[in-house]
Amino acid sequence: MACSRFEYVKNYEQDDSVLPNVWIVIRLDGKGFHKFSKAHDFAKPNDVNALNLMNIAAVTVMEEFRDVILAYGQSDEYSFIFRKETNVFNRRAAKLLTYVTSLFTSAYVFNWNHWMQNKTLHYPPCFDGRVVLYPSDQNLRDYLSWRQADVHINNLYNTAFWNLVLQSGLSNQEAEAELRGTFSADKNELLFTKFGINYNKLPPMFRKGTILLRKRVKISDHDSLNRQLIVPVHDDMIREKFWKDHTELLGKYK
Ligand code: DGT
Ligand code: MG
Ligand code: MG
Ligand code: MG
Ligand code: MG
Image (cartoon, rainbow, N blue to C red; front, top):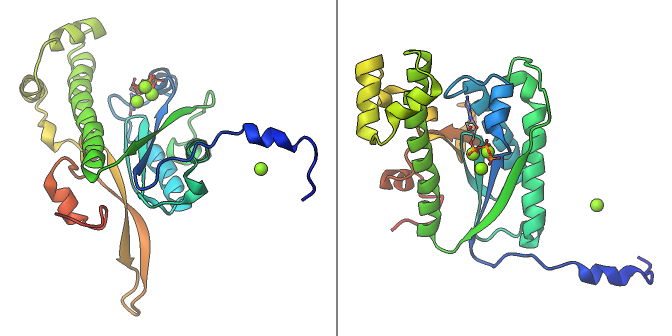
C-alpha cells in the first residue's frame, strides 16, 4: 500500500491491548432501562420475553466470538467471559468492547419483534459497556458470584414490592416504606404469608439469572456426530457444585 505524507497520524492511535493471561470480562448494561421497561410495558417485576430477548442477543455474541466461554445475564445486563488466552483482535480493549456492545445491541433490536410479539419499539435502546480484567480464577468466580448475588437481592425486593403494589393495592411509597429495613427472611415470610408465594419456587431464570454455556450435544443416534450448542442454565454459581459440574470452564479444578 502506498504511503502518504498523512500517514504519520496513525502514530497517534494508542495501544490499548490488555494484559496477557488474564480473564477478560465485558459487561453491558441497558441505558435508562427503568424508563425503557416502562415505555415498553415490561411485566413486573420480570418480563419473560424481555429476558429471553436479552438471552438471544447474548447467544448471537457467543456465536460470533468463540472465545467467550460463558455469558451471564440478569435484568438489563450481560457479562461475557473471554478465555484467558484469547487473542481476538490482539486483545485490543476498544475493539473488543465496541464489537461486543454493538453486536449485542443490533441483535437485541433485530430480534425484538419476534420476542416482544410485535410490540412497537418506541425508540432505539442502547447499552453501555466496560472491560474488566481478572487475574485469578477466584477473582472471576467472585465476580460472577457478585452479579448473581445482585440478582437475588434485587429480585427478592422487587417481587415483594410489586406484590404489595399490584396485589395489595399499596402505593409505591407505601410499599417502599413497608419493605424498609427488612431482611431477606422478612421478605420471604411476607411473600409467603401475604401472597402464598414460596420464593424458592419462582422461576429460576428470575431468581438466578441466565448462564450461557457451550456444551457438546449428541445430535443423532445414527452417527456419532456431536455438535456444540449454546445452552442456557439457571444454576447457582456461588456454590462449589457449579464449578465441579462444569470443570471445562476453568480448565482445571482443585
Ligand atoms: P442506567 O443503567 O444507569 O442507565 O439506568 P437503568 O434505569 O437502566 O438502571 P439499572 O440498570 O440499574 O436497572 C435496570 C432497570 O431495568 C430497573 O429499573 C428495572 C428495569 N428492568 C430490567 N428488567 C426488567 C423486567 O424484566 N421487567 C421490568 N418491569 N423492569 C425491568
Ligand atoms: Mg447502571
Ligand atoms: Mg441499566
Ligand atoms: Mg442494570
Ligand atoms: Mg474498516
